Length: 357
Image (tube, rainbow, N blue to C red; front, side):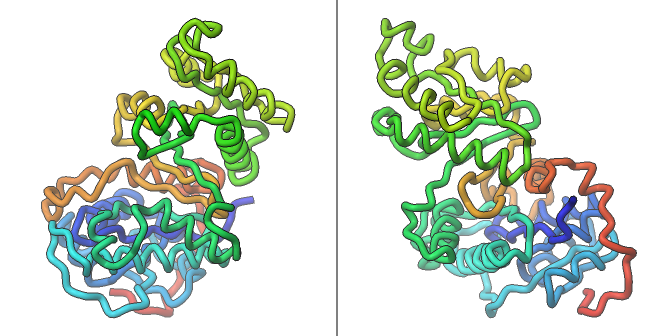
């Protein structure tokens, strides 16, 4: 059964390309109007629409549930609960960071209270976020803290992982933005087992898949070749895999890292657990970032984002490609089916009891 709750799309940094690619997506997919709501500012989105092709109907929603009544081709907007400060397109500023942060907060609150089924986050600028006084390095940590606070638990009790995916390959990372030397130290039995648990739970519980075939990549060439090229596979990775299997997870490996991604792409596995940042991201990004999607696993709601940044140098030029944002929206849909979004009708469009601009 499909959820009738909409997907929340955050505005991203308004000085970047976020507002422009959002308006482009709604031009390309007019039927998505009844399933997606942008958390943002009408005036910012109206200007972005003018840049990307002319006036686009905008509907300011008083309630998330009003989305199902929005006519096709209209961009539904849930206004920000703040006075929107002035900012300059293409430049890092505290004002733009404040706008981006408030959009994230409101979307997270809606997801945590069950008013939206998922969050898709347009790109933000970390420096702008810091300038706005938001002491988190990015989306992941910000959303993790908001979710932990809502659950009344310490942040460390809500571990999260990054998954980068495209239509052919999915990879989950044991560690992300640390040095390679630090990443090797983070390959431990508890952390790897926790990564498998988070991955398994995302696919079977949040997405409803019957099973999740997880392949764990080796750390060393040829997955250690029985200890000839390193013992991490014997001392750490195999014990973690065995523990995961004892918990009922379909986990295998360690597989040679130079071939496991090819095997997953061919359908042998559903997802590959990579042991450090570049090991997992190079194969996905090599296949093209235009359809790449970043998903945060471990949160109590689905969160996806496009696999690119704010591109300040492209802002205002109507040349940014919205394909990755499209893919992120499709990946956030509960049954992972783009056709389900395209074909959904939450009821016949009716006269809208809110401000259409």
